[in-house]
Length: 171
Image (cartoon, rainbow, N blue to C red; front, top):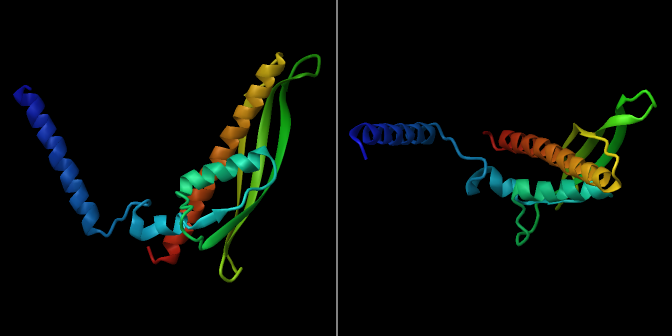
């Protein structure tokens, strides 16, 4: 290793250590660290709404929240999903070349022990896809779009719940 590369590596290591020391001093805790939010996020029982998008949404949320199946849940997250598919880019023959799948997820977080509603929210997500002439390609495109729209909505819900929990713990 050349002297220049060694100096560059040492400088990068020193700045990383300095950054870690600064973050430690300000009380920063990573979102997935055990003592803070992750304990709260992982103790949410996600109830799947009806349909494929609802199932995908639950699976994405369980992954994003780090659901701990071994522990008793503290909260229950219930959702309703409204979805619509709109044609876009109509041809001269009035046939859609593209579609937009839009979902609106209304959710509420309740305490399992009391049934009291702790937090509510609504997220919207939409994803476009090309219409295909081949039947299999059309099905695959629609299913891929459902996966992407569910993943986007799950990410938005995760962020909202993490922000809410951080506010509850005085963070």
